[in-house]
Image (cartoon, rainbow, N blue to C red):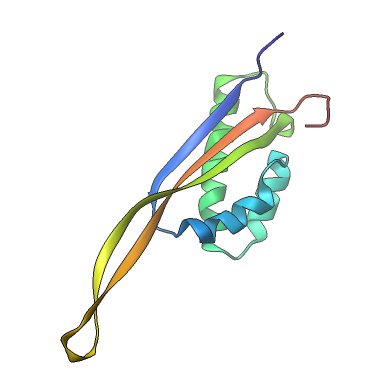
Length: 120
C-alpha cells in the first residue's frame, strides 16, 4: 500500500490569541485547498489572513516537493492551533495597584495532503 504524503508549514509565536484563530480554523479544516483560499480571502478576521499565509506555504511546499501535484488535487488535511508563550505586561490601575495583562501567542501548523478518489 502506497503511503500518502503530507506537506506541512508552521508559523510560531504569532501574536493572536489561540481562541480567536481557532474559530476561523474550524471553518476551513478538511476542505479542498482552492475552497479554503476563497473562504480565507473573504473573511474579515485577522486570523484569516494569518491562516491563509500558512496554508499557502504548506501548499507551496507540496507543489515544490512533488512536481506531479496540481492545486486542484490538494486539501487541508490537518490544521492545528496551539498555544504559545504569553507576554506579561503591567497594567496600571488606580491607587497604586497593578493588574497583569497577558498577551497570548499562537503556533499554527497546517498540513496539506493529496485528494484520493474516496471522497477525501
